[in-house]
Length: 257
Ligand code: COA
Image (cartoon, rainbow, N blue to C red; front, top):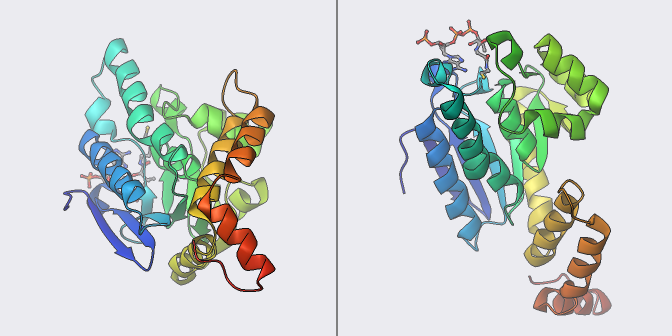
């Protein structure tokens, strides 16, 4: 399948999704959000893809936010629908995929761009990347989960500082604050993401899906994460991957998942 605003490829078990609107710094318009939904859905349903790497085209931006030109004249109802639909189609959708998503932040990750990275399971950044939630400078607030996920990742105090000042932080600060896991020079960014993906690829996809479900349960309203963990742990014992993984260990060989 081909897309107007994305490039997608699949190499050695890794699905690559690259947002490709460099002239608009990869800003997320409605069409791009819809295409991302389709691309992530297809990758998640493709059993040969065991990890997904998400990045932006060009060296300047990962994603510079939601497309401001598109929502500048929206009213209250349209604003709410924009956030609700975006969260459903993309941000919550990614977080709950069974395939892990690694965001390779290759430049500006602002507003919806940082929210997209935060909805991913793992974040790595180029040392030149800049991150922020500048929405209050536009008279609006983050609407794609930013107020929730930033607090979860960096704590309430730092989240308030980033959101209320609308300032960008450097990749180094993002690393210190726990917003990204690793910072490397630009040329090492995709190799690093691929290296992390390669380690994921060795493991049981079924167990990985269960682990994503259990970790996410900690952040769901009215859900007891410990109960979800017990349930997912128990379910693992009924899977072929469990039999293969434990048998391979006892037979001192690599498992074939
Ligand atoms: N929505 C729509 N268009 C955007 C955009 C966004 N979020 N971010 C950048 N663009 C467009 C610019 O309008 C410009 O288009 P043009 O060439 O047709 O005028 C193009 O991308 C290049 O951006 P420009 O501002 O000229 O680049 P810069 O290097 O001077 O500045 C930024 C880079 C990231 C600092 C600046 O683009 C910016 O502040 N963007 C908005 C960030 C933001 O507020 N995001 C949150 C949205 S809720």
